[in-house]
Length: 601
Image 1 (tube, one colour):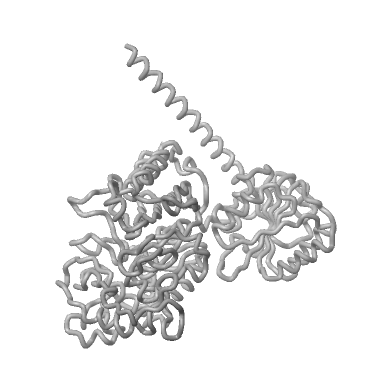
Image 2 (image 1 turned 135 degrees about the horizontal axis):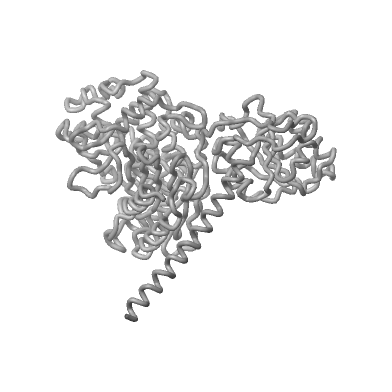
C-alpha cells in the first residue's frame, strides 16, 4: 500500500512538473506568435526585404538605445556576419563622425530604435547620411507614434509594438526571410503611414522558434539532454552540438560538454567541426548536382572523359560517374598513403620545398600528391564492379572530375556556388586559414596514423590531410547552423533564400534509391538495409550521411525534418584510451527526435 501511495505521489509530481514546463513553453510560443502577428513592414516598395544576395553584403547593426540588442544580433548573425555598434549619443558630433568612419566599410546598415531613443534632428540626419551611401533597414520597437519621425525616410522600416526579446528576434528573422511579414498598422501614424499599411513577404530562409511552434512538446526532447550527457560520461564524446529543424524552423539547437574531457573550452553553438565523410554530401555531391543541372557532366559519362590518366588503366578506363557516386565502381575502400612517407618527405617549417601543411609544425614536400599519392591511387587494385563497397577513393576521383569541369579547386567552387550565397559563414575547407584554433573542436590529441600530435583545425583523415586538406571524401568543416541551411536547401528541393541552387528534379534523382543492393542514392546514404538497425519512424524518402569523426546529417521529407549532430568522438585517440563506444549516440538521438515529431501533440 505504501509503495502504491509512493508511486502515485511520484506520478502526480511528474505530471505537475510536466504541466508547469508545458505551460512555460506554451507561454513562450504565444509571445512569439503575437510578435509575428504584430510586426509590420513598411517602405518595402523595392522588395529589398527579405534580403537576397547575402554574399554581396557587409552588414553592420547600429543600436540607438535599443533594449534587446543581444537578441537581435544573435539571430541576425545566424544568417550572415553582422558587426554591431552602439550609437550612445547622436547629439554629440564627434561620436557620430567616429561611427561614420567605422561604417564606411559596410553596405547594409541595420539601425534599431526604441521608445528610449532620442528622436532628434541629429539622429534623423545620421540615418539620412547612411541612406545616401548604403542600404539601410530601420527596426523600431515600441510606440507607433515614433513612426511619424521616420516618415521622410525611404528605407524599409520594421515596426513592432511590444518591446520584447521575442519581438527583436522576429524582426531580425523578417529582415532575412526567416518569418513572413503579414502585419498591418492598427492606426494611422503621421501623414505617410495610413491605417492598414504594411507589406507582405514570403518566408525564404530558416526561422528560429520553440518546439511547440511545430507541434512538438519541449519536454519530449528532454531525453536528448539526458542521452548526450550520458554519452559524455561514458566517454563516447567530450562534447556535442545537436540541432533539429522542422517545417523550416530551427526549434532545437544545443551545445553540450567541452572540446576535451579534461580541458576548459566549453562547447558553443558556433563551434566548427571536422565533418569527415559528411564532406561527400555537403561538398562533392552538391557540386556534381550543380554541374549535372548545367549539362556539363552526365551521370553515364566515364570518369576517364575528365580524368585522362585513367584511360591508360584497364580496370578504370570506363568506370562511370554514377558508379562512383553509388560506391559500385570497384574502387578500393581506402589507401594508407601515410605508409609511403619517408623522412625526406616531411619538414617542420613552411618553405617552397615543404608547402603542404598537415598539422602545426608539420609540412609535406612540394607536389607530394602529384608525385606519390595520385599514382598510388591510379595503380590501386580494383574490386568487383557493380558490387557495393563503400570507398573513399571514389570521391578522390569525383573531386578530379569537378575541378576539371568547373576549372576551379573544389574548395573554391563550393564556397562560391553554395556556401557564401547561402550565408554559411563557417563552412569550408582549411578552417585554420579563416578561424581561430579555439573555435574548432579537436579530433585527436595524438594522431595514431602518422602525425603523432594534436590535430585541431586540420582534417583528421590522413589522405585528405596529405592531399593538402581538400578532398572529395573529407576535409570540410562547418558548424551545425550552416549545415542546417544546406540541408534545408535540399529539403526545399534546391531553393533557399529566394534563389534556386539545384533543380528539384535533380534533388529527387540524387536522393532517391538508385541501387537495389545498397539502397543508396547518388552520393547519399538512405534508410538502412534489412537486418541492420533501422530507424523506427524513418520514411523511404529519408537521406543523409555520417562522418567518421562523429558527425551526422539527416533529412526526412515526410516529416519536413532536418537533423544535425556534430561530435568529436574520435578524441583523444580514436578509442585507444576509452575503448569502443557502448552506444550509437548519433542514431539514438535521431530516434528521439523522430518519436517526438511523429507523435506530435
